[in-house]
Image (cartoon, rainbow, N blue to C red; front, side, top):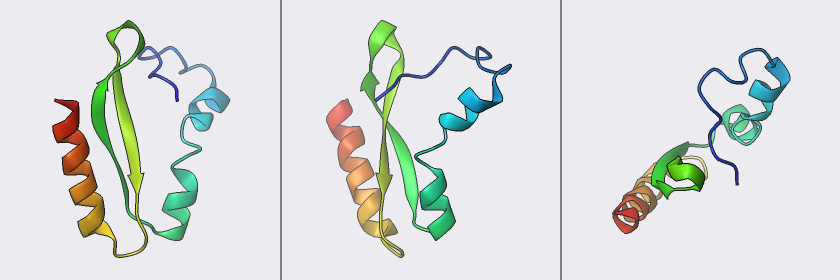
Length: 74
């Protein structure tokens, strides 16, 4: 897991920006639903999140998992 980088800090490094998306690209290419939800805070009080992926047409389960995670993080 990694925390978010400071806004604008990687704008001059396209490779670093691309590498931040490496976990989303395969899911987008195959058409699986995915989402991220807030899940507390990490280092230095920065927000943390969880990425949830589901099989094709698995949105109902994905949304229930997201709701449970959001509730647990309160």
